[in-house]
Image 1 (cartoon, rainbow, N blue to C red):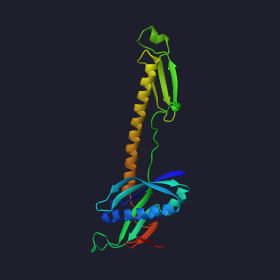
Image 2: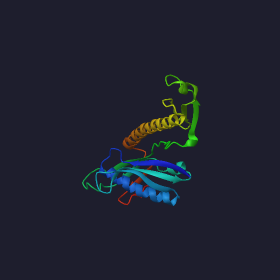
Image 3: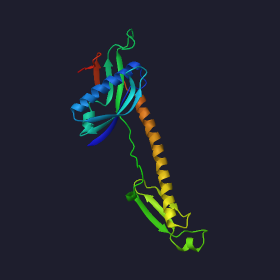
Image 4: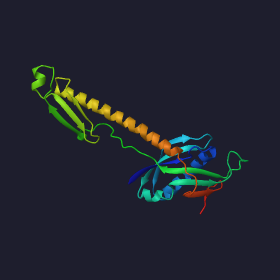
Length: 210
Protein backbone atom coordinates (compact mmCIF):
# COMPACT_ATOMS: atom_id res chain seq x y z
CA UNK A 1 0.00 0.00 0.00
CA UNK A 2 1.26 3.47 -0.87
CA UNK A 3 0.50 6.91 0.52
CA UNK A 4 0.12 10.20 -1.35
CA UNK A 5 -1.11 13.57 -0.06
CA UNK A 6 -3.08 15.85 -2.36
CA UNK A 7 -4.48 19.36 -1.93
CA UNK A 8 -7.81 20.50 -3.33
CA UNK A 9 -7.49 24.28 -3.44
CA UNK A 10 -9.46 27.36 -4.43
CA UNK A 11 -6.23 29.33 -4.78
CA UNK A 12 -7.06 32.99 -4.33
CA UNK A 13 -10.55 32.47 -5.71
CA UNK A 14 -13.72 33.86 -4.13
CA UNK A 15 -16.24 32.09 -1.91
CA UNK A 16 -17.76 30.35 -4.94
CA UNK A 17 -14.45 28.56 -5.59
CA UNK A 18 -14.24 27.57 -1.93
CA UNK A 19 -17.74 26.12 -2.28
CA UNK A 20 -16.60 24.11 -5.29
CA UNK A 21 -13.68 22.75 -3.24
CA UNK A 22 -16.16 21.23 -0.76
CA UNK A 23 -18.34 19.78 -3.52
CA UNK A 24 -15.42 18.30 -5.46
CA UNK A 25 -14.00 16.88 -2.23
CA UNK A 26 -17.21 14.90 -1.70
CA UNK A 27 -17.13 13.69 -5.31
CA UNK A 28 -13.49 12.72 -5.01
CA UNK A 29 -13.95 10.76 -1.77
CA UNK A 30 -16.87 8.79 -3.19
CA UNK A 31 -14.90 7.98 -6.32
CA UNK A 32 -11.83 6.95 -4.35
CA UNK A 33 -13.94 4.71 -2.11
CA UNK A 34 -15.28 2.91 -5.16
CA UNK A 35 -11.68 2.28 -6.24
CA UNK A 36 -10.84 0.83 -2.79
CA UNK A 37 -8.67 3.83 -1.92
CA UNK A 38 -8.78 5.07 1.67
CA UNK A 39 -8.94 8.83 2.26
CA UNK A 40 -8.54 11.01 5.32
CA UNK A 41 -8.36 14.77 5.83
CA UNK A 42 -4.93 15.85 7.07
CA UNK A 43 -5.53 19.61 7.09
CA UNK A 44 -8.40 21.87 6.14
CA UNK A 45 -8.59 25.65 5.72
CA UNK A 46 -12.15 26.86 6.10
CA UNK A 47 -13.50 29.24 3.48
CA UNK A 48 -15.23 32.61 3.87
CA UNK A 49 -18.74 31.12 3.90
CA UNK A 50 -20.43 28.22 5.66
CA UNK A 51 -19.76 24.84 4.04
CA UNK A 52 -16.80 26.17 2.06
CA UNK A 53 -13.09 25.40 2.23
CA UNK A 54 -10.18 27.34 0.80
CA UNK A 55 -8.18 24.11 0.74
CA UNK A 56 -8.39 20.51 1.89
CA UNK A 57 -5.34 18.31 2.25
CA UNK A 58 -6.16 14.61 1.84
CA UNK A 59 -4.05 11.51 2.44
CA UNK A 60 -4.67 8.62 0.07
CA UNK A 61 -3.76 5.03 0.89
CA UNK A 62 -4.06 2.37 -1.77
CA UNK A 63 -2.64 0.71 -4.85
CA UNK A 64 -1.76 2.40 -8.16
CA UNK A 65 -2.39 5.86 -6.75
CA UNK A 66 -0.39 7.63 -9.44
CA UNK A 67 -2.48 5.97 -12.14
CA UNK A 68 -5.72 6.82 -10.35
CA UNK A 69 -4.77 10.46 -9.84
CA UNK A 70 -4.12 11.08 -13.53
CA UNK A 71 -7.86 11.64 -13.90
CA UNK A 72 -7.96 14.23 -11.10
CA UNK A 73 -4.73 16.21 -10.92
CA UNK A 74 -4.90 19.66 -12.47
CA UNK A 75 -7.53 22.36 -12.94
CA UNK A 76 -11.17 21.55 -12.17
CA UNK A 77 -13.90 23.69 -13.75
CA UNK A 78 -17.38 24.14 -12.35
CA UNK A 79 -19.97 25.78 -14.61
CA UNK A 80 -22.87 27.18 -12.67
CA UNK A 81 -24.60 30.10 -11.01
CA UNK A 82 -23.01 31.49 -7.87
CA UNK A 83 -24.68 30.02 -4.75
CA UNK A 84 -23.96 33.27 -2.92
CA UNK A 85 -24.50 35.96 -5.55
CA UNK A 86 -27.52 35.07 -7.73
CA UNK A 87 -27.08 38.11 -9.97
CA UNK A 88 -23.40 37.51 -10.62
CA UNK A 89 -22.72 37.13 -14.35
CA UNK A 90 -19.74 34.83 -13.96
CA UNK A 91 -20.48 31.16 -14.69
CA UNK A 92 -17.02 29.54 -14.76
CA UNK A 93 -15.30 28.80 -11.46
CA UNK A 94 -11.90 27.13 -11.17
CA UNK A 95 -10.17 25.13 -8.47
CA UNK A 96 -7.05 22.98 -8.50
CA UNK A 97 -5.91 19.55 -7.32
CA UNK A 98 -2.20 18.92 -6.87
CA UNK A 99 0.08 16.48 -5.07
CA UNK A 100 1.18 18.00 -1.75
CA UNK A 101 4.79 18.13 -0.65
CA UNK A 102 5.60 15.80 2.23
CA UNK A 103 8.63 15.44 4.47
CA UNK A 104 9.89 12.29 6.11
CA UNK A 105 10.47 12.79 9.80
CA UNK A 106 13.32 11.09 11.60
CA UNK A 107 11.27 11.17 14.78
CA UNK A 108 12.75 10.04 18.09
CA UNK A 109 16.26 8.66 18.00
CA UNK A 110 16.33 4.89 17.65
CA UNK A 111 19.38 3.17 19.12
CA UNK A 112 19.65 1.00 16.04
CA UNK A 113 20.31 4.13 13.97
CA UNK A 114 23.23 5.29 16.14
CA UNK A 115 26.92 4.54 15.67
CA UNK A 116 29.30 5.24 18.58
CA UNK A 117 33.00 5.96 18.69
CA UNK A 118 34.98 6.46 21.89
CA UNK A 119 38.43 8.04 22.12
CA UNK A 120 40.75 9.82 24.50
CA UNK A 121 39.88 13.36 25.40
CA UNK A 122 42.37 16.14 24.86
CA UNK A 123 42.98 19.43 26.65
CA UNK A 124 42.52 20.18 30.33
CA UNK A 125 41.11 17.65 32.72
CA UNK A 126 44.03 15.79 34.23
CA UNK A 127 45.51 12.38 33.59
CA UNK A 128 42.15 10.58 33.76
CA UNK A 129 40.83 12.60 30.86
CA UNK A 130 43.90 12.12 28.70
CA UNK A 131 44.56 8.43 29.31
CA UNK A 132 41.05 6.94 29.39
CA UNK A 133 38.70 6.83 26.41
CA UNK A 134 35.96 9.02 27.84
CA UNK A 135 35.14 11.20 24.82
CA UNK A 136 32.23 10.01 22.68
CA UNK A 137 31.23 10.66 19.10
CA UNK A 138 27.73 9.57 18.11
CA UNK A 139 26.42 9.54 14.55
CA UNK A 140 22.81 9.30 13.42
CA UNK A 141 23.01 7.11 10.33
CA UNK A 142 19.71 8.21 8.76
CA UNK A 143 20.44 11.93 8.82
CA UNK A 144 24.25 11.83 8.80
CA UNK A 145 24.39 14.17 11.81
CA UNK A 146 27.22 13.49 14.28
CA UNK A 147 28.04 15.02 17.65
CA UNK A 148 31.14 14.77 19.82
CA UNK A 149 31.19 15.33 23.57
CA UNK A 150 34.22 15.29 25.86
CA UNK A 151 33.11 17.68 28.59
CA UNK A 152 32.71 15.06 31.29
CA UNK A 153 35.15 12.60 32.87
CA UNK A 154 32.53 9.89 32.58
CA UNK A 155 32.07 8.14 29.25
CA UNK A 156 28.45 7.51 30.17
CA UNK A 157 27.79 11.21 30.80
CA UNK A 158 29.49 12.22 27.54
CA UNK A 159 27.36 9.69 25.68
CA UNK A 160 24.20 11.01 27.33
CA UNK A 161 25.03 14.64 26.51
CA UNK A 162 26.02 13.77 22.95
CA UNK A 163 22.68 12.03 22.36
CA UNK A 164 20.78 14.98 23.81
CA UNK A 165 22.63 17.40 21.54
CA UNK A 166 22.10 15.11 18.55
CA UNK A 167 18.34 15.00 19.15
CA UNK A 168 18.25 18.78 19.47
CA UNK A 169 20.02 19.22 16.12
CA UNK A 170 17.73 16.72 14.38
CA UNK A 171 14.59 18.34 15.78
CA UNK A 172 15.81 21.76 14.66
CA UNK A 173 16.37 20.38 11.19
CA UNK A 174 12.88 18.90 11.12
CA UNK A 175 11.40 22.26 12.11
CA UNK A 176 13.23 23.97 9.26
CA UNK A 177 12.08 21.33 6.78
CA UNK A 178 8.52 21.63 8.07
CA UNK A 179 8.56 25.41 7.50
CA UNK A 180 9.91 24.91 3.99
CA UNK A 181 7.29 22.26 3.33
CA UNK A 182 4.53 24.56 4.55
CA UNK A 183 5.75 27.31 2.21
CA UNK A 184 5.76 24.94 -0.76
CA UNK A 185 2.24 23.78 0.02
CA UNK A 186 1.00 27.37 0.19
CA UNK A 187 2.56 27.94 -3.22
CA UNK A 188 0.48 25.01 -4.46
CA UNK A 189 -2.56 26.52 -2.75
CA UNK A 190 -2.07 29.85 -4.53
CA UNK A 191 -1.06 28.40 -7.90
CA UNK A 192 -4.13 27.89 -10.03
CA UNK A 193 -4.00 27.47 -13.80
CA UNK A 194 -7.16 28.31 -15.69
CA UNK A 195 -7.86 26.66 -19.01
CA UNK A 196 -7.63 23.05 -20.20
CA UNK A 197 -9.39 21.62 -17.11
CA UNK A 198 -8.82 17.95 -16.32
CA UNK A 199 -12.47 17.69 -15.27
CA UNK A 200 -15.54 19.87 -15.73
CA UNK A 201 -18.74 19.81 -13.66
CA UNK A 202 -22.06 21.49 -14.37
CA UNK A 203 -24.91 22.70 -12.17
CA UNK A 204 -25.63 22.51 -8.46
CA UNK A 205 -25.42 18.71 -8.49
CA UNK A 206 -21.97 18.87 -10.11
CA UNK A 207 -22.76 16.55 -12.96
CA UNK A 208 -19.55 15.68 -14.76
CA UNK A 209 -19.33 17.15 -18.26
CA UNK A 210 -17.87 14.82 -20.90
